[in-house]
Amino acid sequence: MAGANGNLHSSMSLAALLFAFFTLLILPGTANAANSGITRHYKFDIGLKNVTRLCHTRSIVTVNGQFPGPRIVAREGDRVVVKVINHIKDNITIHWYTKILATYDPCYNSLTNHPKYVVTIQIYVENRHGIRQLQSGWADGPAYVTQCPIQTGQVYVYNFTITGQRGTLFWHAHISWLRATVYGPIIILPEHNVPYPFVKPHKEIPIIFGEWFNTDPEAIIKQALQTGGGPNVSDAYTINGLPGPLYNCSAKDTFRLKVKPGKTYLLRFINAALNDELFFSIANHTLTVVDADAVYVKPFNTTTLLITPGQTTNVLLHTKPYYPNANFLMAARPYVTGQGTFDNSTTAGILEYESPSDVTQNIKKLPLFKPTLPTLNDTSFATNFTKRFRSLASPQFPANVPKTVTHRFFFTVGLGTNPCPKNHTCQGPNGSMFAASVNNVSFALPTTALLQAHFLRQSYKVYTADFPYEPTSPFNYTGNPPNNTNVSNGTKLVVLPFNASVELVMQDTSILGAESHPLHLHGFNFFVLGMGFGNYNPSKDPAKFNLLDPVERNTIGVPAGGWVAIRFQADNPGVWFMHCHLEIHTSWGLKMAWAVLDGDLPNQKLSPPPSDLPKC
Ligand SMILES: *[C@@H]1O[C@H](CO)[C@@H](O)[C@H](O)[C@H]1NC(C)=O
Ligand SMILES: *[C@@H]1O[C@H](CO)[C@@H](O)[C@H](O)[C@H]1NC(C)=O
Ligand SMILES: *[C@@H]1O[C@H](CO)[C@@H](O)[C@H](O)[C@H]1NC(C)=O
Ligand SMILES: *[C@@H]1O[C@H](CO)[C@@H](O)[C@H](O)[C@H]1NC(C)=O
Ligand SMILES: *[C@@H]1O[C@H](CO)[C@@H](O)[C@H](O)[C@H]1NC(C)=O
Ligand SMILES: *[C@@H]1O[C@H](CO)[C@@H](O)[C@H](O)[C@H]1NC(C)=O
Ligand SMILES: *[C@@H]1O[C@H](CO)[C@@H](O)[C@H](O)[C@H]1NC(C)=O
Ligand SMILES: *[C@@H]1O[C@H](CO)[C@@H](O)[C@H](O)[C@H]1NC(C)=O
Ligand SMILES: *[C@@H]1O[C@H](CO)[C@@H](O)[C@H](O)[C@H]1NC(C)=O
Ligand SMILES: *[C@@H]1O[C@H](CO)[C@@H](O)[C@H](O)[C@H]1NC(C)=O
Ligand SMILES: *[C@@H]1O[C@H](CO)[C@@H](O)[C@H](O)[C@H]1NC(C)=O
Ligand SMILES: *[C@@H]1O[C@H](CO)[C@@H](O)[C@H](O)[C@H]1NC(C)=O
Ligand SMILES: [Cu+2]
Image 1 (cartoon, rainbow, N blue to C red):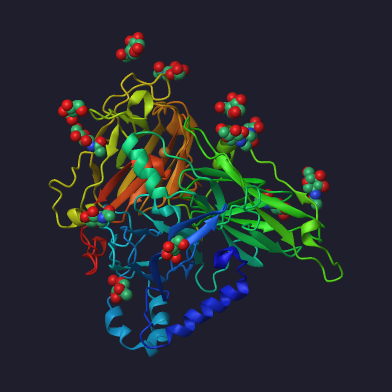
Image 2: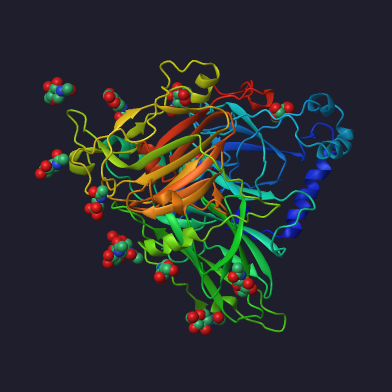
């Protein structure tokens, strides 16, 4: 029952796959010369499929009938072109997690008509650096931010290059809660003949966490937004779509990782769960973290991972030197800091060693060792673990931290309330409705896409450019919360000049309970300079910032009752969403957007929208 994504993926078959792509390259029609890589074409048919987990069958939204969805495999520098066709009645959009920089090569168009020259062109292109780049955010995906949804029967081609990223990312639906079932891995291999900065793995295996709901998540979020209460929680967590043996009626739906002794495996972790950060551990095995959010990190060893929704991380698993005569449980369960109800269950898979030929064993009869996971609220572990991530900061992989800052921001992130509409009864705090905000602004999505309004200079009645740089009424953010917990709402953006050096401190609030919020920024990676508990102190804390080897990522947990400081260079023109990756908080308004203006040079401008961009 594991399906394509549950099975082991050997480097052999990966090589075969790549070979297939290169073979395709010399066929007419499929050949395209990208900047330094090749173009990889995928087709995503969005359709329904009946899937059974925990003895509950549900019609779920899938890509190509697969759950989890298909893998995208590319090399750094490649162009990825994905044709998405929507066959369902719901609207859909897909977010790709890559930095979405579209590369424009002036020679490109005239050459594509001569596919037999592609190999020559590649060499030619690889030898030229500083190729003109036009940047395009039209393929990023969040609904009503960079595009209108792909409606029933419509097609949209996402077209982007992968630049400066290598490791694992993922793609997922970016509208309402369709991400619950519409997600899959993006595997980014290094450029040709560029080795990993760690031992070459024997095999590479994606491990993608998700949440399974016995009822339709779309109905759950609809009801939650109507009543103002917390949403129903999931019924199980999953590993590669499989809940595992610790749930009723689920033993057959268990992910099994089959390994050989004395080898190194590269595990590519993705947390695609809707609402939960997860701890993960494999009994009796140590893991070496080598990459986070598709950026290499200084390797470190740990027995347990913490991974927030939106984050990805690559990890080496060194198997035992000899056949151990045992099986090992690998398990994940949540790290929870909020006060609401949550799914406190544990998903598990099994690490199995291939038995040597002289041993005839019934693998199921072997002793099964279980890992010890941190308690569900182990903030001490979470803090220690998060602080261990460091950039490689080597000549080959430098940490290009912005050293000076042109624009400084201080954003509070947290929960709040909206009053209950007249004549309704609401199920939020004290009869109100749950809300969430950034600087007390609960973001209201427009009915047309922000990027289009920005590009066409038609922001009137779509958004305003007055997002507050800091809270308008400061309070003791981590002390006793104010009596009035109501949020304001609006479609407000920060507008930045091209290439602004941004420093942003995000501060959790204790309104309705302090809680860890995994914040995800689209369009950029950022550097994590520092974090702490309590209120950020602008006169003392910056002295402790790490400007040498801070980790570079796209999603970071703002500590519960604490703060995190990040920097990024706004060198990507467009409109870029930033939001909590706990989907319920996004639904409640914990989101905002940055509009980055064009620069003066031709290669610093947002390109015009593709002709098939969906309309609202
Ligand atoms: C799912 O199962 C239901 C009930 O058996 C059936 O009516 C429906 O057509 C199935 N849907 C799909 C997509 O196979
Ligand atoms: C992808 O984008 C490039 C650069 O803009 C363009 O030349 C190419 O035709 C596009 N490919 C498809 C299939 O749309
Ligand atoms: C696994 O770990 C447990 C507890 O630390 C230990 O008792 C057991 O011997 C280990 N088993 C193997 C096969 O490493
Ligand atoms: C991690 O542990 C392995 C042995 O399991 C060891 O070889 C390696 O040096 C350790 N790496 C680090 C960064 O500590
Ligand atoms: C999970 O929550 C349920 C209900 O709140 C409780 O009965 C159960 O003991 C909890 N399980 C764990 C493992 O904490
Ligand atoms: C964590 O949970 C345990 C048991 O539920 C509780 O006793 C403890 O106070 C909690 N710790 C924190 C830091 O909230
Ligand atoms: C976190 O690190 C501190 C200081 O190194 C240590 O005292 C504490 O035991 C660690 N906590 C956990 C849960 O690892
Ligand atoms: C509230 O309900 C009452 C009785 O059902 C009705 O008379 C009144 O018009 C309603 N008020 C509003 C604002 O809808
Ligand atoms: C904020 O509240 C915390 C907790 O009550 C308290 O320890 C701290 O002193 C307060 N800070 C200020 C600046 O009032
Ligand atoms: C908040 O409410 C409490 C009692 O409900 C009251 O004593 C206190 O003065 C209020 N604080 C503010 C800042 O209004
Ligand atoms: C936003 O606030 C306005 C009034 O300021 C209110 O009419 C509207 O319902 C609010 N929208 C949301 C989504 O809360
Ligand atoms: C789909 O998107 C269009 C364009 O924004 C909107 O008018 C329509 O109401 C949406 N349909 C559904 C079912 O949400
Ligand atoms: Cu959040």
